[in-house]
Image (cartoon, rainbow, N blue to C red; front, side):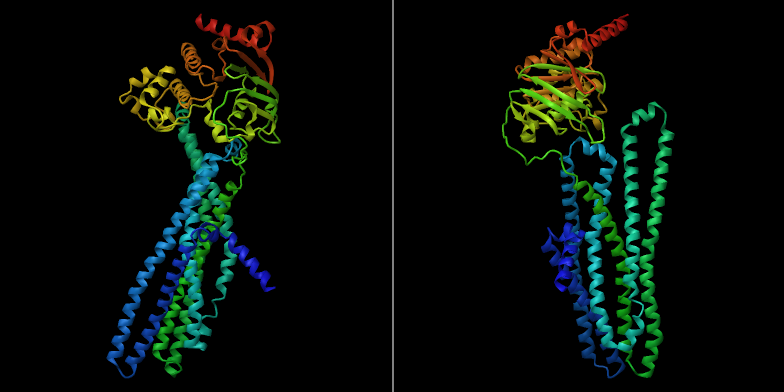
Length: 593
């Protein structure tokens, strides 16, 4: 029975936030901090006894040498106590910041391993809330929460035996209400947990709304909907305030309830203890020492409430962190059977089906496609036909589950994903740029490996050098957030240069020339074919004249390949491609008129 109980207790301890975040990694720091805290609390026990002895000496025959001895002992104890306080602050509070750093880095690293589906499930504002507000709550739990919890526990263990030793009868009357403390803590604990989870979830909504509004500020201003956005944020913020006020009720009740119990004990002490001094049952020094110890119990009573609040906040936040950390990456980097560094560029899609979630419709349906190394392949089709999804499978941005994708005869699921992506230059639809120098933005994939001349050559290839030279600091100019100080076409061309800078074996361009004029598009595609001969190029585009001389044109519709061939072959078929081409020619003719 006892063994089973101890095993259960050990399991609960190992699952606790304190063990997982603090003790497991920083066991030595925990031990040193705990020893210094115990030393402080033990030393803190002696001053009331010294005061008791001094008062009793003053009440009787005064012994100045003895009084001086106790005063010196009191000062020495205070000095040593201060030194130990410094140690536990460093090893408890200081280490809690290390714990927060470790957990945040693990959280961020885990997020980086996730696929596109993960980011469809969790919004950016929600992840930001978990990485900041929840991390801070965990730090407070394993730092101040652990510290004051241990401190209060030590007082509860040490002080009751001392006051019983001083006067069993008086301790019975003054401590009769103290068993209410754990009962109140237990009742309020679950309420705090539930309310704090609600507060954190609402904070995530507020964070996401602010992020979304700032990111889309141009749209907000252009549609003149600032007041609507303010109203929406105000509603979310007011709900956040209401939830915090609701949480404040149980939190604010804890400390006063425990203090009230202690103060009732002091009142009983003065009434009953004073009478006992008059009757000669106890000395005046004993009463003063007893009062000091009961006053000491005010702190642990308050600390219990604070500790319960911090630990419940930390546990609630830890559940939110665990929810994300338990998300399994679709791409397992450890399942590697190939370490090939360079690729020829032979690609095959064999009976590939894809859907984002089981209940969703199929995005790709039975894709069969072979691309020979060095070929230039264009994928066209109406919006929503599955073009972007198909290209996202090659660098394993999306995971292939139904069917197989081969590169150079190797299943990409068995390839090292890091090495695979290093061989692929991928230009997505969205031209996302980080806030950094233009030169660093171009060399994003291999910073420090290229010269300034190489950067300028890449800028010339994408017809961007002349525009960069017009800037005050040219290649040293800093980009605004998401490249806000560049036009749409400039951002697209910069992302193309960024992909080409890694000298990829396979180049994938997902409709990344939509904001570039026709002449610019022809210029860039010609330069890629000239400067990167023998490289496999796959491009998604809606401008069909630009791909007339491509080796293969693939036409997709509703997740299937409906046509495939050269421009001339597809025109002869008089099918989907022919209709799209005639429509574009007609639109261009209307624009010229």
